Length: 104
Image (cartoon, rainbow, N blue to C red):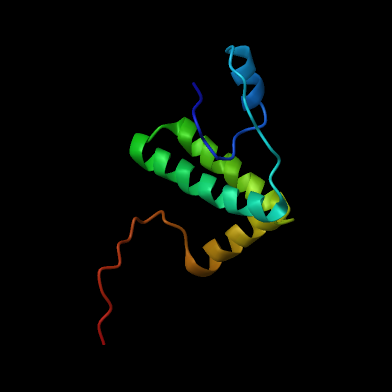
């Protein structure tokens, strides 16, 4: 009996599957596929965090973000600088502000 997944997994998952006595069937994604699967994985991990509120799920979100950053050729420093610039220009989320409406 087999189970279908068709999803991006961490590099060590196939070895973990083998260690459990099962046989993984994998392939390597093309660049276009990888980009698509990274976006799907990001949505999956965000949804898991929103549902479970587990810090491990939040760590998974960061791992996928780092993979996207690397795929896009963005250095950690550049991403950090852009994040800081946006925070300087538009603020952070520290004050928990909810915009309800804008009136004229």
